[in-house]
Length: 510
Image 1: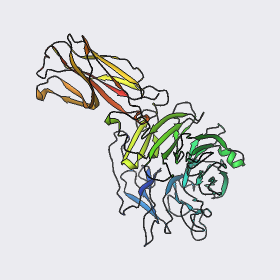
Image 2: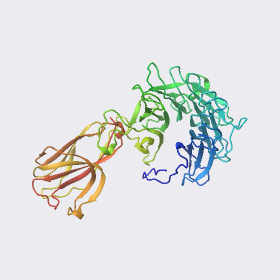
Image 3: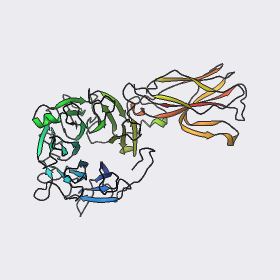
Image 4: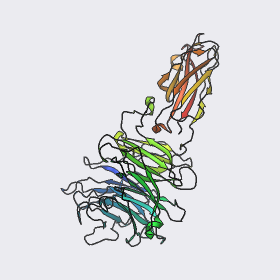
């Protein structure tokens, strides 16, 4: 559990069984134990139980300290119980959120048919039980319960309904999205992927009312959509809920990653109103894999898309072509599977942010919605220069006023009264007083990891240029610049070096 304000770790839970995949699925849920703090669901879908492999289980953990409130155990070997988890909202009127759990490889009634369970958040009992205490189930190869969408009252009865992804339904693997009543468990409607689709329903999310009909709509991913090519490019569909209920054509937008080989739509998510146009937007993730959807060596990406037009508002990729940046912005030779996306106002600035998990790198990243397509970055000055006998060395010009990735930034510092040697220091912010080594009152404001050396200093001005990062993954990154100069005339301090004030740069979007 990570603090949204500081990024520091609050608490953590470690699995007790090797390769049980604890944390592969997570979800926020309302207050389950009455302490006033929202809690969380954590799946462990390859957990072995009772001598059976990959049975799976789901933990209900306290949002206050991650202690265990309850554990749901799967029933059968190789069922993958907990591969998907979600809050269903309060479906039984007891004011406590209920719990959705998917077991997409559950064998009965046939191989890989899949089962979705809805449990009461107050009693832990199964709602809408069927003979044998099995929840909603699919047919052979359906992978029923692979993904859930929640927060939708589709039929207007005041009770939240359940959206379920069924990516193996309707051969060969066209996939479906089904809407089930939270009141009685009955099916309200279903949408089947088009004929050029493979595995629609692999991911689903409720994203708010896109088509202004008063009912929240749905986005689903079909990450193995092939279209007319043999590459795995994938497609995401934004669907009208009302049209699904009425059995009408439901596609509002169809978005494909035309570059190919990308598994576009492996994940989808609601992102709120990312660009402030009063229309809910959505995110689409995927993993590039050259030979298969779930193969090896992959690079992840997230596209944030407009709910009004479908256009890309922001793009985050772990290894875009041409990545060339100083090392503090990431290592291009380390593939990053960007997945497990969450959204919220973590920065408390009134704008949504996105947090992206990177399990291949054991990392996560937070990006701010202020950085959308066409949005410049920013800069701010701080600190003070280190006085020299020749005068102070202060930043005076930044020729790039947009600070977007891929641009060239030229920076100057002046005034000095004679020429000399200088360097532009670039890195993370630091505030290191140099008084202990005789440099009072100098302060080094940057931990330099890279430096650009000006070829010459032009009389009263030192000038340097460097290329901003060329990868979209650097959007939102912040770094600090400080100029250092060794003038021809001696400096006033024993170090013999002049230091400028500092400027912090935040990378923007083209």
